[in-house]
Length: 289
Image (tube, rainbow, N blue to C red):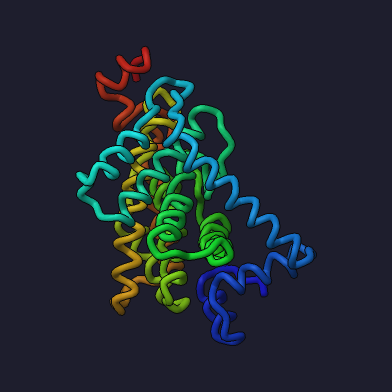
């Protein structure tokens, strides 16, 4: 059940009449030489950690180690619960959980890098939002995580998920692609639609730079996780509507990788350009680019 690219993944899905999530789950069992229960329990633990990371800061806000973020998720949650939110239930809940996860990470809490610490809020943010709004049970979310992991696996195998290599398009971009694909499968889409949504995300986030203020995974990372959730929802909706993408996922992934390698060093996690080099950012972290 192994696959090297999205084309081979689709071939396996068609040959065995399986969704992406099941192909990936069986790959983990076969290639990892593990029992099915062991693989399931490991992913169940992933979901447990995701929930704790997403829910705790809303009740008990905590300041980040660098002092740049802390309490933002609770503020948005308060606005949402007051009835003043403008984004709708799914996006509101998802962005709250995404931003909360980044607060957990920046305060040295336990998170799941999905695929990185700086983009760790997007997959759980959207899946937990979907769970609440659409009443999915934990088993359905666990299966969706296998779908997301297939997209992350392809990105790591054929491109990069590191901001230092490919910019934030490789971190938040890939995380959003993972979330979009999992969302499409959860809502009844087929494997081609899943990969179409993932391709759409990378297309929409192509060229996004990695410019953490002070070199810390705090700001603007937290805001970009919220934006990543929105991008994933848009891509999923486009795909589920039957809109076909001209550029397949493998090609879009390669394009993202090429663009990332061409970004100047200042825009690849060095904190020497972009947001990190602005006067206000330098003043906030006590340094100058």
